[in-house]
Length: 563
Image (cartoon, rainbow, N blue to C red; front, side, top):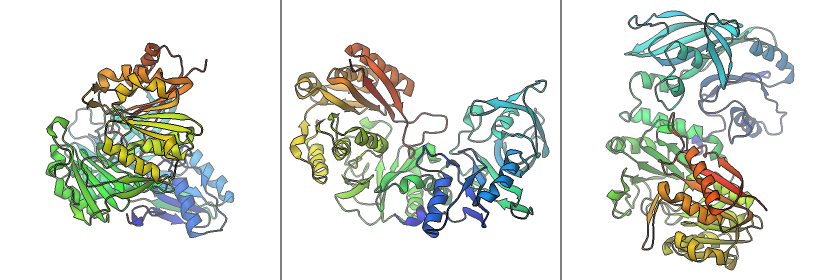
């Protein structure tokens, strides 16, 4: 994959630089400064300066913040001597700001046709969860906020607004426009249209330069998303618009692209990245495009053309019908062409890397490639927990979890899968690590039957990894995650040692996150094992859910009491 997809400072993002200040055009979804995440603007700028000015003193002061889902002008100080002036201007709201927002309707419509072309928003704001609350005008609490707005463009009931808060006023534009019944596109919680991002952009910031006090105007161009949405190009009808969304999604993953020893991850996650029915995965220099519905299939050539513009060596295609029963053979060319549909063929097999570990994949071998990319962070956590442990990996497939556990120093592993071919693949994955085969046993068996007949003999285990398919049928058993997960989890909990842990996963759409946690709590009671902790783990950053929805992968770690 060409490195220009993830440059240290994306073209056009650096909008001002001098010895005192640096300003960037912050993309949506990237927080200002969030050490708990893999990526933020502060980290990107730090990496940029370390690469372009090695050895030079480096300082980046954080004073202004933009919410994660918004975009626009973001300024940092480069010298401590500039902190006082900038901090005072930002904290006291003395810097003039002009935002652009895309809304349905117009503030102040109140049933009067299309609404005014300009006006003033007056609200009382008080701190609330995750932002501000808009109080009734008669409220004594809170602070007054005054925001001037004007209409920049209208297309039907879609309106593009410029909004300028008065100096000194607090502001929370999502809350204020929601209160005006003109919610921002993407602000689903307040009734805004479902969209791949929050349509809020800080276009201009004017402040006094800390060195000489002269006004400095910083501008960030309005993203193409706003004009695309106004023109109704949010679908899959325009190749250029699809390419822009692909590149925006790629930029969102800059932190993952720079993880050491990692060249396989999700580049686009369907509606979560503004491309419903479409996913794109990176495997080294190649892309795998998957289409999930009729609309995506109808736009197949446009999607492939747009994806190929990113510079991949080759592109493979997977057609994934909504009803898996339509598929008799997942290797049929109509669902998974063996050859690339654009560009050159990938090596077969091909070795990709995740956090430094090698995994064998086959991009043209049916619908599956040999690794589930959404489990990267879970594999990292297993690797960190693994030293000295006895671990079982059920429904192991090609054993990426086992590879992570072995690399982390697990004392022994037992991996169970019904497919001989998958386990042969798994052995090759383990052999690349150079681990002792006798310590990492592969068992060809139905995992449910193995739990019933052999697990007690092979256990107890300190950690069991349970990631079954949503539906499975073998010669011996039938399994549905929605109806059978509790019983299966209880069987696993019985073979854990005191203080042992169950890592439970499901991507069944019918099992919500809260329900899954309850299922596991009930399973512990049914197994007669006391649970010291039942902890949810977050979804990976490259698999964002659709707006207003839940992530497809749910992960819970159950830790048993030691007594």
